Image 1: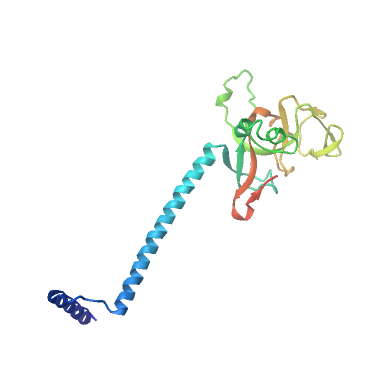
Image 2: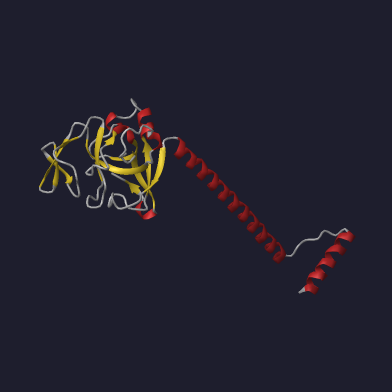
Length: 230
């Protein structure tokens, strides 16, 4: 094989020296065409990967800065609506407020039954501490059961809202019923009432409306769970 290649090279050089135009054989031309196609495919694949990376970075930056958060769910308190490990896309409340007059008020304002992304700061036991900004906090997703001014009572193991409708199970609650939700506060619960720690506990408390920082919109990961939440 090496002798053949060497002979072809000698013939090519001799042809060039004599001024004879050298033309490749058909198999040689086919091999060169295949090599050219492979090189083009590799360059194209590299360009596509770079473009995907750039677009992903731009989309991620836009999601973070222009009114959306992605929150990782931990625990089973919101199952089966949201499961531990789900990544949930949430629209920021600040964006909804900025769209006042553009979107309906019922979409922007918190209502009973809404899912909310809230900033939870545990109640301090030591009275007189004023540096609340230093208190540890976490982002939680809960469902709004009652609004400011609503009254919750307990009967037969169930919570009764405004003496009219069932609002969920009393569960492991240490509240003294009936309870009236203060103005500007929300009574929130998890969808899995037997394991959720929420406003049914005095240590958890009722959430200030100002602590609502967003609204869950959709599960974006894992793939089998992708879809809107309600």
